[in-house]
Image 1 (cartoon, rainbow, N blue to C red):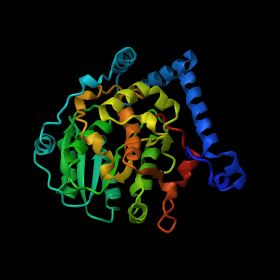
Image 2: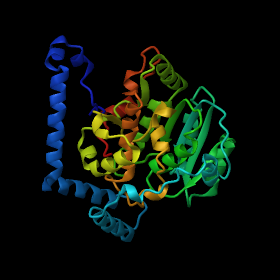
Image 3: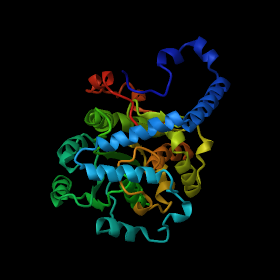
Image 4: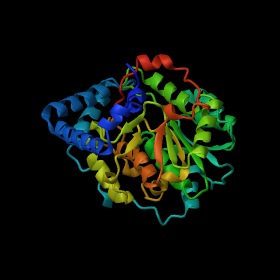
Length: 369
């Protein structure tokens, strides 16, 4: 099975006959029909049963958890379905807190920007640091590094990061909101700085997927797999002033998908909080939340005053959380800033380097995002 795509194959889009069949008006109608059908699907009992089954099975497959904890997580999941998780009035606002104070709260020191490029890494699986460090060495320009490490992880993890990157900023984060909550906290603390390019990565394992480790390796390969790949990404940003975000090939998902429909309540409330209505866009988003972007694209997220306590406690949720909503708003905010998204399949061919993970394309499954 090939990687999931949200575009027609090049062989079709280059056909003049197909272009005549799929003009802008017909594409618009097709999108409207798709949205209508998906809304209808998620209201059906059969789909709700499948969705619930998937969540429960993901909890049961969770590695390292005892049966009692898994049972608690299942009960929490069902309770969560009947609660109002997100109320804009419940967001905690820290908009009046100076950026320097936020930085001291996160990093125990204020931030001094040294470079135009910034990497924000969520190191949940600290044992993967050496693998990640090898990937980071492929970035051919100097960069500032911010690393979030969940509370409770051993101090040696931070020590290992600082041995390789002595100027890195370390944030000891609560275990909420997966990789998204720590990213929001860090980005909010540095949004006022003059970074030009931003890379967001995390140590994804995705235990609910059979090939979770392969997915992570593929994502890293596509974004920072070699110096040539990263240089190609920089070149494409510089050559195309309308380009705002680059996502791994196969992970640029359309906002008209069933999972986005399931997250509509979260999107509604983020729309109010951020002042950006998602219905204005036929948006795409970076499934898996790993990407390169122009750092200023997400400024409204950094200025929204969203805090880690706004995210629900971690219970292995597969959907309908603030993190899942923000994942989609990465794309929406990029488009709201006047930029477009593209995946690595569309990098300039003169710079493009073939991924070393071609075998993954034959075995990978569609992720649940």
